Length: 414
Image (tube, one colour):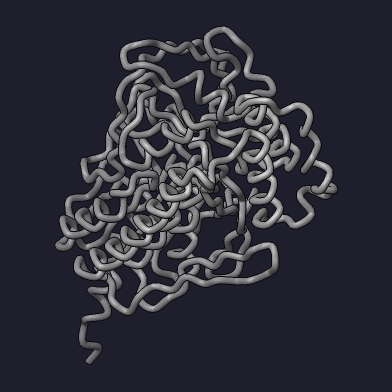
């Protein structure tokens, strides 16, 4: 896909988003549509009832929640607690309620900036984990890593904490500090003190990696997040910079994901008339996203993934793997195969609702399973201390071998 096509697609998306924004503002500003705290709760109930991917709502009688708090909800704070309790009954860490403050912070991150330490967090098996630290942020510089378990935040246990509550405790004004007690496999628990900062969410870097090296004839693109609305355009620009290289390494390690649209746009730059991803809703309706006929490059590609590569990272790597467009190197990915829709509520709060599961082009459901690389390669603490990156080295070897095969194919057999 060339730059003109990308701009056209982004323009269409922007227009669509603007229409949704105007509609939301109209609803909120129209006095006739103003809602009471009880009405807010009922709105949340209806959204989950009609959209949640599991139409049994976690094998329960969803109707019982509708009037459960009629006599209890007196103000918005009551409504927030009631909605949160109702949502928790789904047993889905990705379906969540956001207060107006939390939704504002999320919107800022999509716009490309936030205040905090720069880590993506999630809950797995009741444990609060760092999915990935974002590149060149206080969290990464402090030494926080994917799969670190956060035991305490400022001396308070995280047992039973929600992702939203944890994020609220970790974020804070620029220049202030947060203390995290970290449990890491094979090591003693350690307290990390991290100073908060204004995090500029630049998604793409073409700088040389900090550990290991890349052969001069090969290109290296580090894609650290799909969160920012600028991720696809930044990636397109990086491809332009790499057009004279013999092959490209796309580094998705510790990339926690982000916007589905970014994954689709970037896959479209590399795939010609191929399936990128399919989504399936609760009624079994399957919708397939296909790439356009034009691509930005035909250069050979190797993608690096690890346990911190999640969501949109898995959509991109799965699309490239199944279509045999790229070789995947590293460790098995995180395993998040669910799609959420953001539903803004009239008071400025919002509901993330899991509305679909996604399948790779081969029809594989990777949720809680992850994507297994073509070449499973580990990287140890000793490797890092020795400034070695076996995964990156393997990627270079694969691309160099590809180049030799191309050269041999050009030799006249006669």
